Length: 148
Image (tube, rainbow, N blue to C red; front, side, top):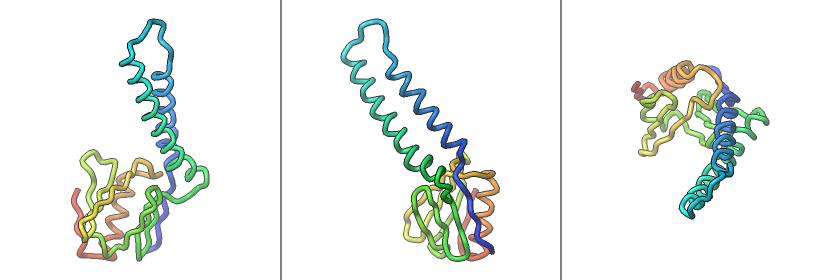
């Protein structure tokens, strides 16, 4: 089979950036009334957590999106998941299944390790991406199992 390439989903990236900016604004928005120290500490914690999420979205999604890097690539030898920079040989895969929410593909390797591929962050139809991964696995490794 010919290699398949999938790019980053820009809508997913910008939705997360908007979400982080909205929460950072809501958490840091000054209130008129006096607040107790508990709420001050809670706001500081929320700013740290949402700020961290904002930075991870920029690092893992926005920068590769702007550089036009590949989010998912597979050929006859291996599957490359660019978001987490993981390379898996098709012979190492024991099982592939769609998660219960349908937004990620769970890959279980023969050594027991697990990898989750967030197909919401990949440009394209989620079902088509999942089915193309399964078709590629079955054409190369007929022993691989798949569950939906």
